[in-house]
Amino acid sequence: MSNPTRLLVVDDEPDLRTLYELTLLREGYEIDSAGSVAEALTLLQAAQYSAVITDMRLPDGSGLDVLRWMEQAARPEKAIVITAFGSAENAVEALKAGAFDYLTKPVDLRQFRLVVGSALGRQPAARLPEPAPVTEVAGPAAATALRLVGESRAMRAVRVLIEKVARSMAPVLVQGESGTGKELVARAIHDHGARPDGRFVAVNCGAIPENLLEAEFFGYRKGAFTGANEDREGFFQAADGGTLFLDEIGDLPLAMQSKLLRVIQERSVRPVGATAETAINVRILSATHKDLAAEVAAGRFRQDLFYRLNVIQIRVPPLRERLEDLGLISTRVLARIAQDAGVSPAPRLTAAALQTLSRYAFPGNVRELENLLHRALALAGGELIDADDLGLPDTLLDEGRSESQFAALETPVAAAPLAEAVSLPEELPSDLARYLDEVERAILLRALELHRFNRTAAAASLGLSLRQIRYRMARLAISAGDS
Image 1 (cartoon, rainbow, N blue to C red):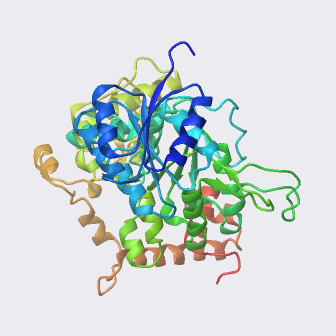
Image 2: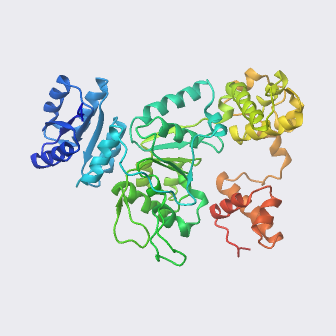
Image 3: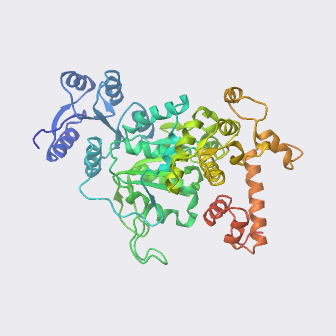
């Protein structure tokens, strides 16, 4: 190594400090060491390092004191904190204070080397295994990327947060409604992070049957159960050296939440049917449309797992809160659709069409806007898309209100006319989410009964795909024999 990388190791236990030094020296790094906060700050003031590895408990303070000094001094070094086993609060506090990552004692030296290498932008020598068949591994899609387009204050804030959190290994919880682009936020964090060349594995937690969760997440060995005819890697092994994105994390059952928490803490997985655990080096990003704090209060989500996942939260705003971005997003969407269809030049929205769009609530957010414009392009058949081509009935629009007035509202009032078109209960429900779940469950059961529990036919009758009805049946605990 022509220009050795210099690291600073801070630990007050001489034996452990020597162990860390020898391990890193064998990797080709140059090492300075300190036994206290004061010694560490003296060395930091005199030199610059590629990374700082510090124990949490030191005789004259803590590793957090070192982190805070580095933050105030705007130091560029990545920091790795070593905490006592089971000290979840310390690990979370360190990540919030700017640590790149943390390790727990007793330190696994293989994991130690991997984390240090990751902090320095090095990838493991061995390449990543092939993913499990149902794992979704993909690069940034043009259609999805449109959801982060915009210059509104809300979207600028999201992009600033992405840039900040991408530099560490801190777990991030992305909160937002369906169709806002939560997965794109996770992809952006991965792409701007320390391991952009690693694999990005996206998993929809609500789309996997409960009895398959453990095998899909952790993999299995041949003969572990009926049908296990070969060894199979799980989501965690597929994402080793990269990022695992757990979408709709709030849909995981409590039993699986417990197993997931253990993997996050131990940084190792044991495939179903295996006797030994395998170390993994994965960054965890998660997303949900639910209020997980409320789910914790209701006993449906583990508080300790929520604490682990919610180190940093990014809220993706719904489209109705950033209507000033409508014009730019629509232009990008139409350009992509026209290119895919071989249409040139791309159609443009008239002023009347844009004004009509700005009066719509977009419950499906940017995903719904994309579908709406796709249909409008097909109906327009020319270079201009007018309001009539959008196919939005007046009952869905906020009539009589100007664009500026509508933009000033935090929540559109387009839902009011809809309430008059449906049969409402005499008394308003005290738990709206549960009430709507019961209504959806009744509708799904009715459709299934009408089609003799043929899920494909029932889904088609409701305008759903087979995958969508399976997801809803799993979420609402509907089995084929329900009545």
